[in-house]
Length: 209
Image 1 (cartoon, rainbow, N blue to C red):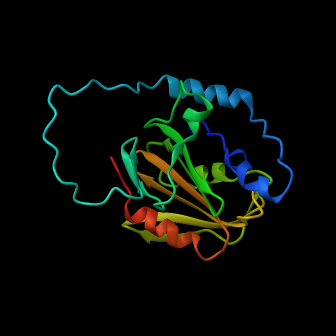
Image 2: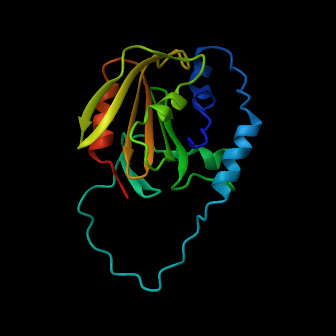
Image 3: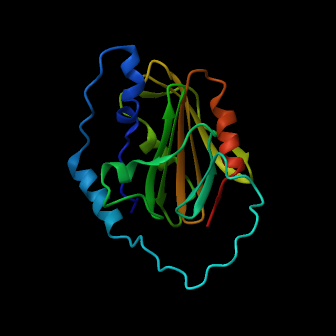
């Protein structure tokens, strides 16, 4: 049985970008039943761990943390002038992202990045999660799927075009599996030739536990 799908919030997150190009559109109306089911699943997962009884002396960090997101037992790179925020927690503070599934986003007027993950033991093909990343009515395929090895990770790539924002018409969805989780990364960009380089930068710093 496949994991419950996460909601896509791309359009609602891009509303600030659209404001400069025309009248502010109304916010999308997500399916309440799915949203409640996802919130219930996340709320059932313990998120508090005991405080350690001993704190070791800090040691020098062997690499820079600038442009690096580390949480939920994984790390991934991102542009230094952007910061990921937890969309799940923003929608429902009582049910933030967790190890099992989550949704992050980062954006400015020139870039939009979204990352989702789901607990999927035994799954080797991340395409199901990439399909969930597609924004219905806004994202369209721009080329066929392509498999590429990045940082010793088999990554499935799918170039897309999007009408989610007139400022960011080009994009890419990438999916991969690490351990018992599937990941899907989506980006909207102004130019078609920048997405894959940003993905390479992100995955060069990726690790998961």
